Amino acid sequence: MWKLILTVPLLVTGMALPAATVQLKDKASVSGKILAEKPTEIVVDIGYTVLVIPRHQILSLLQDNSPAPASAMANPSGIFPPASSSRPTPMNSAPPITSPATTISSPSTSGNSFYQAATGTGKEQSVRDLAAQLGGAVVQVRTPEGLGSGFFINEDGFLITNFHVVEGETEISLEVYQQKNGELERKIYKKIRIVALNKFGDLALLHVEDPDAPKFPHISLGESDSLGVGERVFAIGSPLGLERTVTEGIVSTKTRQFEGELYLQTTAQINPGNSGGPLFNMRGEVIGVTNMKITSGEGLGFAIPVEAVTYFLKHRDSFAYDNDNPSNGYRYLEPPGRVKTASAQ
Image (cartoon, rainbow, N blue to C red):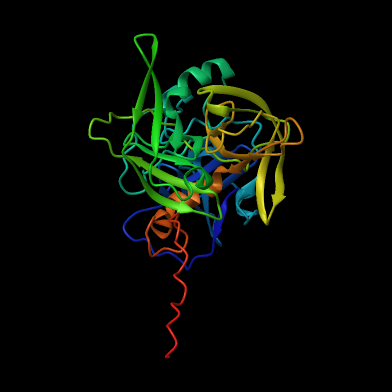
């Protein structure tokens, strides 16, 4: 979806704004003046307002240095059906298309690059290929009370899991599995810090603080808004402690409501131990975090939409794990009862 921003008139002096036609994925185009080009979006002035168009919705950009045709002047909306007689040239300023293999790279943890957002333009691959590429970023989360799953969102050891996996726990360890020289290497990290918790959203942000921790493989966060019912998805996790288990299914519905929250429902098998693990689309992008199932049936698993995860990460300071924060995971002791004083004799 585009964002519509109402603005006051802009005063630009000393330069002329370039005119262009933006070809969109929905078989439409937008004609206007380019105000700004950013890595993730383009800002277009169409006359009476300004549109901010995400790059993943753009097919191509046609720069127009000639005077606007009469048909354009007669259509003040600036929105046109796709042209059939001319083919727009590719957008040179668009970010390069990356495959899921390259999404396990190394974004910086500074500024707004704490996690890597997928472009939505990656190539679809088989579950077999994607599981081999992405499996190293999925971990097993262990506590004295049980275990769950999680996944790294950047190379510096920050990872997402479910709140209920670490609720009330301070002794947390991770079991990480990485391919080295064609063999699977298992490594356990025991110095894990809880960074932020969202009890009501069932999300937790953890950090590996072992001094010998390497740069970790990680995966990018996609978006679930464009998912269609029936679209193929797959999950990686540790159901019942069986690490690196891959299950495949489809999206059953995107709007299953439980206790006022909407969840993705999937036929991919979800079992105890999968909690906190990623649910992927066929481009290898995380579109949800698995967190529950209906135990009396089969193929009835649920995942938190990835948009809730990105909101949690963007506002992680508000969910910081702090004893003064009412949303933190500390277990509070019962207050002592009133001491009865001895009656005077």
